[in-house]
Length: 384
Image 1 (spheres, rainbow, N blue to C red):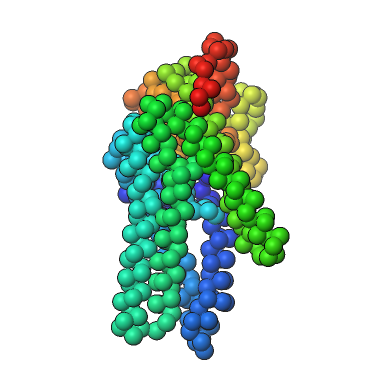
Image 2: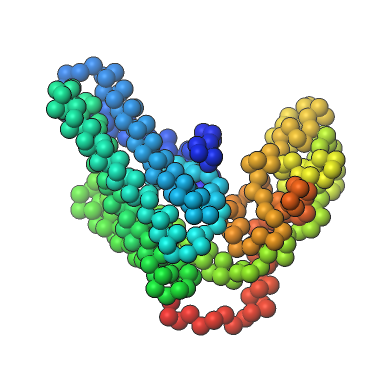
């Protein structure tokens, strides 16, 4: 899930928002301002209802962010680096650079999210009771009560033992501890996720047919998301198992074609070296150190009359936003960090930042094909 709007960094972690958040944000504000709040506090000015609804929706997404930040902070304390956090339509996603080293670390990382949501639910409930006891108006009491309920529901839903929910991570940790096999544990959690997802899809359609309420379709949508995500997680686990022990240097394209700092966009687009086979190229300084990544699409987005004056470094993705790796890093650890698109190549750098190679999704696919051809008979996993 790629962020549409970057929000900056919190505790050193990049935070972004996907465009779909605008949809759920608008729905929450509309439901609270037009229905829930007017029912509990009659006769108030519309501006009060809308203001309270906006504040409540902001606090709700702050709660989601706190849930994901808890995962990120505990992950870092357990030696797992975090790329970023993206809030989107169905909650949030913390993208980890690698996996937990043992089941205990997995339990801690997965369990802290629901725990934080539950704690927030309790705090909002206590605040609601406090302001009610002090005789405050009904709007802040109701807003805090709604936030308490939604955070408790978030904690309970995420604790369901089905991937990719936090409960699925907890289930994977328990299966991993029992079997000693991380792949087997992941496949088990993935199966649980698909089963739960299909139950939600069926229940959602039955509810819609019985009541004609769109809540049923929303339930089915959540179920379909769980099925898709759990299936992708299972596939990625198999890929990680296939690539186990393979270093990045074995998959990277060495000595890639580069765009030097200072290269004009007109020359970049006209030079035959940049027009064939590839769609993105590392940008390097005179010392050969990587400074970013430029794609043909970014260069073409600049009006033709400006391309002589604009340089590669003017439109490139800066190195701070590019995924990088060392040549001896495990290739399997790149899988959760790689995303589709020309601008999401992985630059392979040595300890001094010198460019050694580049890795794309096609490089990963080629390596997987080679590994499967070299080992056509994987271990028997019928017990999975």
